[in-house]
Length: 106
Image 1 (tube, one colour):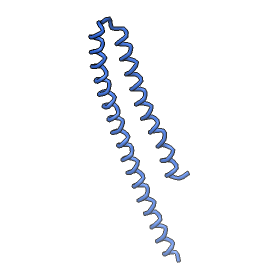
Image 2 (cartoon, helix red, strand yellow; image 1 turned 90 degrees about the horizontal axis):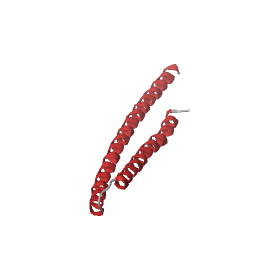
Image 3 (cartoon, one colour; image 1 turned 45 degrees about the horizontal axis):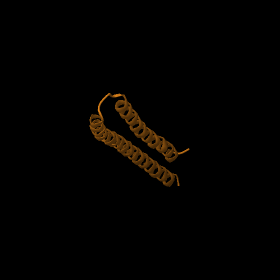
Image 4 (tube, helix red, strand yellow; image 1 turned 60 degrees about the horizontal axis):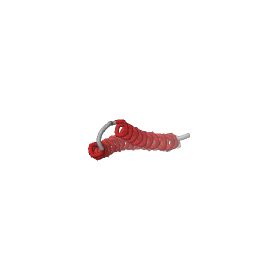
């Protein structure tokens, strides 16, 4: 098992985790909004206004949550790229060293 295999195995789990968090946040928000609207004893006009306000707030919350998830994913990708780059440089250096050792041994 080489370094590339390790990185490839981690990628799907991170993506899946981010996706699950976003889905969970959306479902939780929808359930909370629905329960709040159904349990609030208000007139129809007030309820419609509340639904409108709550929908706008929910959309903002979801956008914020998605932006946070996007930023975290971008950070993870950058970190992985740096790690891969460092590993590639180390491997290249190692190969160069071995090549020099082989030339000297001849």
